[in-house]
Image (cartoon, rainbow, N blue to C red; front, side, top):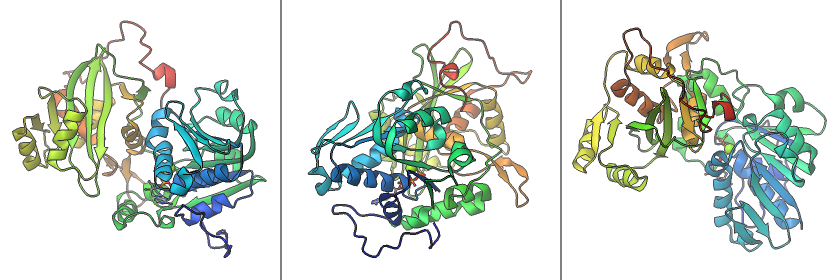
Length: 419
Ligand SMILES: Nc1ncnc2c1ncn2[C@@H]1O[C@H](COP(=O)(O)OP(=O)(O)OP(=O)(O)O)[C@@H](O)[C@H]1O
Ligand SMILES: [Mg+2]
């Protein structure tokens, strides 16, 4: 956002019951038909748009507001969680809401307005229902034809947000057209982040300038050199799949502790995220493992850089070992994983995010270096640890890749397509 673009309405007062950023004001006061929020990570886009929608719903009777995401797990981990935070931290808002229907995912206001959370499988599906306001969260996860069907059935205003890792239909069809306002934001517009989070996002500059441009500045990038293009989203781990091991990466203050489980079936890999959180001590990790139902007999492969943590967890009764080390271990484990079809459960939202960002580094001239960016890998690293310790390449350099015995609905390369 440039200074000229910031609405300088000095009479503007924060709505009662909300603490807002400048992005809220921009969205709340917008009179455009389509308000495009392009931004870096954690700029406060989703939060601000939802606050604006809560205000609109509370102020105007009988409004229908639809918040749309790529799928329900994505909504649950992002927009729905933020909405529930906004709701639970504002008594003024709570007084206006009759009920939150968890199973239908609908906030029902006393004045007859509703805010509903939805995802649509295809454009046909998106033809159902009409609304006054629409919010497309992380719009680059939605196809253009789904958007157009939803937009056609929206009377008043459309809000859109995304991280611009590459150009897509918003750039091609909307930005620059009449009735479309563009708001570009980044973490510097969000006064609610800790200095550590600001620092972590800015630190991307030293890691990879292309990632920094997109995620720290909200500028449209052309992120190339993604490492994994061999993964698909599946609904769940097939019942017949065999557990290979769990993988664990240790973090604490700034980095998340990440844990996944890896299964194999018919020559394909099946991965499920178990937890992904900062601030976990080893005792907390042990509790988490129990909480998510890990059996003490299941093998856990953990980051070899933390022998003390591994030993502590071992003493707490877990069957945990260090990942193999070696000069080429990163490259080798990536090579192993690239030979498989990897199915990732839809609920593994953080892993899906990491896979979408995990790329080869580029040097100052933009040339790709044979080394992955060491960032957003707290669930990918555990996957690599298991690959190194547990998955073998045969002499011919191939991994077994038998075809499935039967068509399995859960092998959703066909259902969802390649990401
Ligand atoms: N008005 C606010 N009051 C309190 N906390 C806020 C507010 N706005 C943002 N935050 C905090 O900042 C975090 C990041 O905001 P948000 O999720 O909206 O960013 P985003 O721009 O949508 O990021 P991404 O592009 O990664 O989805 C929120 O999870 C919340 O903790
Ligand atoms: Mg967001």
